[in-house]
Image 1 (spheres, rainbow, N blue to C red):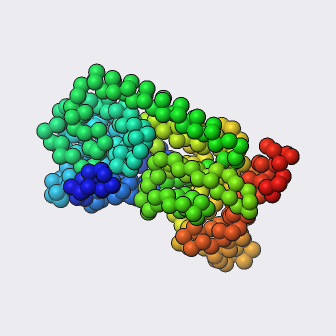
Image 2 (tube, rainbow, N blue to C red):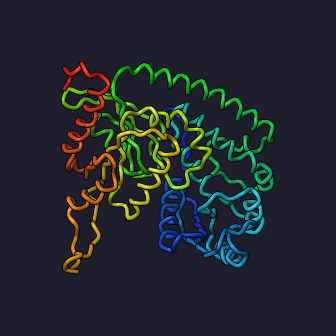
Image 3 (spheres, one colour):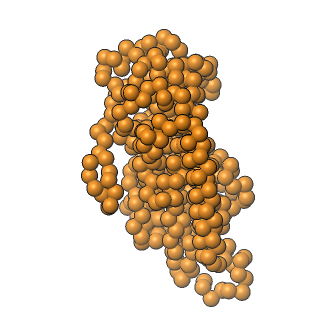
Length: 399
């Protein structure tokens, strides 16, 4: 145990984990492998070391045990032979599935939602973020309470057990419901306060950085605002929205760094992080950041687009920033005329992406090596200037 900035932080050793996924519906084997890779990164962020991955092809997950009984027996044999401490499933498990699997395997079981909630709990810094995470955790726990009672003797802490402590897990449904009501009241007050703060920011144009988790939003924030926002190569390094005033060529605007999105983000979290997502709703311009070096970046683009459509249905201008150009290795393409394989240039890729975008604002950069950052700043300046012109037609002394 160590003291850190006035908090007591517990150093958890890495737990040995097994990951389990089901290939069903339209999911291909390649996609399933990529999903489990993402789950492995989530597990690593939470402090678990992945020892083995299991997948099974089913028409739909087994309603009783998620995977088939044969696969469950295979997993049981493996965990007994390899000193495994936790099993993580790549989907939300129903309370009955959780109970049945625990009965069979007698080991700590986590699903994707529980893992994400746990990472959020360990990342939350402010009272606001902590309350949001705690509310989401309580809502997740409520239907699973009976299950929590049955194996309290085996709880050892570690991943999936951070945030609200064991004493809260042991309490009955009534106390948890009271806690949920209290947290909702507390968050309502904080949301009101945040609304007032946003209202006080006056006439400045608001720009929000959005994107999948770990694409480099905070690094871009630091680059533009010359501030020191926490950024590292881990999932969900940012939970609290940071807002900074940025000035490009004499034109000031507000830039906010928001929590990253992820595939299958637990709905409890979307509800809890309402005020954080309000930054996105109230923005005049969205800067959508993509990690172009990630093999799955086109899927990430669609996940963020869909999540944004759920949060905010208003039409907003968007600048697409394809980041991490320094780590990007383009795939070879076949030339339609000659049939030869070639590596596409950045200009060609820009053309392809611009065809997908309504606003035609698309920039390839590396925030790390500062490549093409000037072009990005110019694009940002031009779009903010247009918004400013429409809002204040007679106030042209700034540009």
